[in-house]
Amino acid sequence: MCWMALIPIAIGAVQGMQQGQQQKAAANAQAGALRQNALYLNQAAADSKVRGMQEADWTRVQTQGLIGSQRAAMAASGGVIGQDSYGVLEQDVAQLGELDALTISNNAAREAYGYEVDASDKLLTAKNLKKQGSKAPMMSMLGGAIGGASSSFSGGLFGGGGGSGFSAGTQTAIAGGTSRLNYNQGYA
Image (cartoon, rainbow, N blue to C red; front, side, top):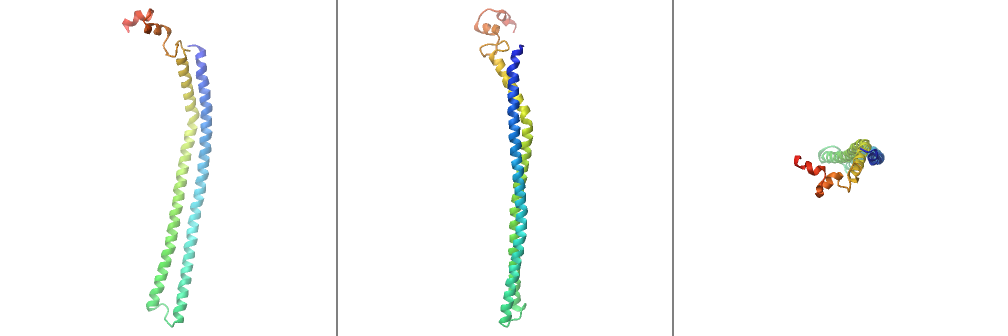
């Protein structure tokens, strides 16, 4: 094998390594962006939970204010607070107010869960990109070396010619000429 035949292989390997380093850098940058987005999503999830608790508490305060207003109206009209229909009305308002507060809390928890799932997905994608990026230089170098070897074989650097990959004796035999391969074809 001629040392000249190794030049395309070496060039292909170097070019492949450079391309792989670029792919690795791009994968690392994309993974970093995904991790940053996951951080933002986790912050949004925490904010959603806090907002949900605050809104639920505020709904409870408003409900208590409504019950207080109703009690004042009941007392002004001469009714007995907390008894008969006044008591039932007060309980209904308290229950509906608590239902509103729980609905607000539940909606906030669902919103937070959505953010957390999205963040988890982005972190997993970032991890996979980082893994693929670490393999890119070696895989690209091997691909470049194989491409260089392929061009060496097809270019005739290994004794071939005309891009067929066959030696001159084989090409002569295929064309029907006389060579030592023609005499040995009976043994093949």
